[in-house]
Length: 115
Image 1: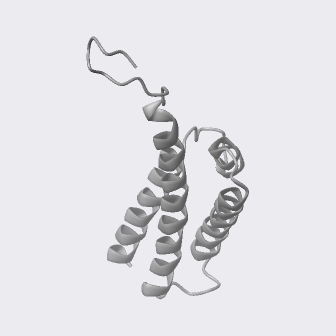
Image 2 (image 1 turned 180 degrees about the vertical axis):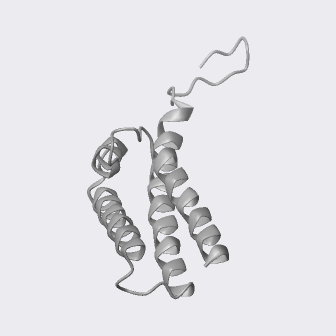
């Protein structure tokens, strides 16, 4: 290290590299959790098993949980999740997917209020 400044030289570590990976895993886990909460709301609101709305929401939520859980286990890139879970290609990020689930929870709350 340099003695004139008193600063020890250490190998350079990119401060964002590990944080980003951790953040991505956190987002993936959040996506799983939000979809599980969405499924729980279907039960909480007693939406009948044969209701087309319930069937659609369950199918999408379970699919997204499966894809995301699998990607987490395999250490896969989140782009794989977004490409598989975007029904119309408009979803670009995990945040977009999380936003869709949160939006659906609000829709469900509103649907319950008008039911």
